[in-house]
Structures are given as C-alpha cells and as structure tokens.
Length: 449
Image 1: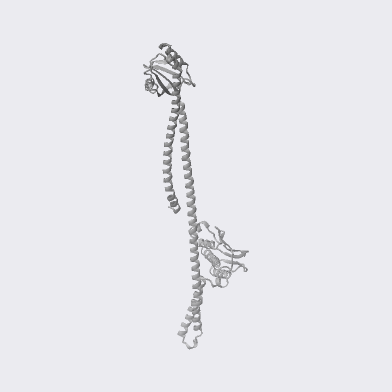
Image 2 (image 1 turned 60 degrees about the vertical axis):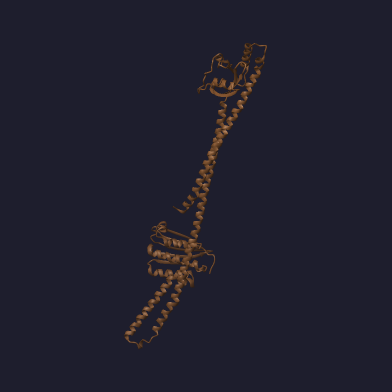
C-alpha cells in the first residue's frame, strides 16, 4: 500500500470512529430530548384544555345554582329548570353539557336528544371503553377527567374527546362537558415533524462537516506527501548531482595523474631508450630495445586515451568548445557518419559544472548515435543568444519512441535530463521513427568562471 494511502487511512479511521460515535450519541440524545419535549408539550396542551373544561363545568354549576337551591321550587320543577338551563348552555362550535343520574340514564343531551331517557351505563366507544361508567366514577370521586372516542357534531368524525364530570350530591346527578382534542394530536404531529426536521438538519450538518473535514485531510495529506516527495526528490537529485560531480572530480584528478605522472614517466623512459647508443649493442639486444620502445609508445597512447576518456584536458584548459571539437573528431574516427560542428566562438566561459554537464550530454548523445541510430549525418550546434546558451545534437538515424525509451532502456537519457535540469536548464528530446533524433538543451548563463 502506498505511503500516502497509509497516511490517509491512519488519519481517517480515528476520525470516522469519533464522528460515528458523536453522531450516534447526538442522534440518540436529540431523539430522547425531542420525545421529552413532545411529551411536555402534549401534557401542557391537555392541562390547558382540562383547565378550560373545569372552568366550563363550574360555569354551568353557577348557571343552575339558582334553580338548584331555590326553596320555592319543588324538586321536580327544579330538575326541569336545571335540565332546560343545561340544554341552553353552549360554547364554541361543539361545546355543550350533558347530565346522567347515578344509574347511567341520560338526562340532558342537546346534540343527541334521542339519548335522553336511555340507560347508557354500559355504552362503549370504538376502543371498548365504558365511558359513562368512567365519567360517573370520576364525578363521584370529587370531579375528574376522562378521554374516549366520540362523534364530533361539526364534522361527524369520531375523534378523541376529553370530558370533565362533576357530581350534584342532592340529586345524585353527574354533569359534564367535553372538548374534542384531535387538534392536540395535530399540533403534536407538527412539533414532531419540526423536531425530526431539526434532527435531519443536524445529521446533514454533521455529515457535511465530516465530508469537508475528510476532504481537507485528504488534500492536506496529499499536499504534505507531495511536498515531502518533492523535497526527497530534490535531496536525491542533489545527492546524485554531488555524486556525479565527485566522480567528475575524481576523474579529473585521475586523468591529471595519468597524464602528468605515469605518462611523463613513460615518455621519459622512451626518451632514455632512444638516447642509447645502439651501435654498442648486439642484434638481439637491439631487437629487445626496439620492442620496448614500441611497447612504451603503445602504453603512452593508451594512457593518453584513458586520460582523455576520463576527463579531456581541453575541457579544463581551453574550454567546452575545444573539448566538443576533440570529442567530435574522435567520433569521426570510428563512425561512418558525416559530422558538422557549429560553435559560437563568442560564448561565455562557463562554470565548471555547467561545462561538464554539456560535455557529458554531447558524449552520451554521440555514444547513443553510434550504438542505435544508424545515422549518416550528425550535427552538433552550440551557440549563445543573449544570456541563453543553446546546445543541439541532431542525427538522421532511424529514430525511436521517446516515451518507451525514457521508461525502459533510457537510463542514459534520464541521466542527461536530470543533470541538465539540476543546473537550471531545459532538456528536450524529439524523435520519430525514420526521421532521426534531436536533443536540445537551453541554459541561462548566469556567470562565468
């Protein structure tokens, strides 16, 4: 698994666990608080309606008090007046009063007069609730409330009704009234929907924040990884460049030692052999001397060749142009290709590492041309335009696929590109099958040595 993927996972896994835990706790608490709020709200609505019902029954008791307590009326007359008063009392759209005796017989019902005179003690609603029996119990207990299902006069629908019943002790009557509380359920439903919407909004906010956080973490991780990769790549390139320059210095030192040390000793030995008086030696010794001179000449040439290959002295002594010229002359000796050299004699004297890099680019290019290109013409172009130096090596060889070459066998090509880019130059490689290859280096000349 790539390092950046590991970094992202190590960052995201704890975040996902924490976010999931916080989300679950938040959702659980929000639902619990919502249910508690709904319960409180519903109880508050019920309490307000209970208070209104109790006030209405007390108002009815006040309305019938005159007839109920009038000593001038007989009991039957008083009862008839009370029934008449209760039948007339109305409030709101569906508010009315009803009365039952202790046996459960209906005495007053202005909405359903057909119920008057009927014993409804065992009357049940749709849920099987003995509502009259429950109301009589509440009334005899000192007054109380009861919920049941009943038909709403204004709509004809069977809905939940909350009733309050009180007791007339002298006549043993139960007098009550009720309110239809389906609006409570509607208001509770509205509140529940609002709470659910708030919970959904909260969860959406958490998910959005989580997604944004994940995106920021991924971007930051990739940015840090890219920065570290770029820094590591830069350090690696610096190390590679220092290694190459160290090798160049070692080559330069070794070339000097071979040229100025070993080669000079070999030349001195050859001179001493040439100064010998060959007249004083016999034919056998003469042959050995001649072989020695021949071997010394070959050794001198070999040392010079190795020295030049390691580090051309012209590169350090008289500059890049002379070194490239010598390199191209050597190329002509072992290649069948015609060569053309275009040099700018007015070019600035370059820094050592710049000159070495350009020389190695030419050297590597010529080696590749000889090995792979099958070219009949090679051109090396080196000119300075203002503060920009251009080096171009082109051939008319068979060409190749640049992408494949850079990704597979082209280690020399990659080395050239990296060395040029490290000194701040631009490296361009163009090649096409059957049309040859062109390598261009553009370098801004910042100073001279």
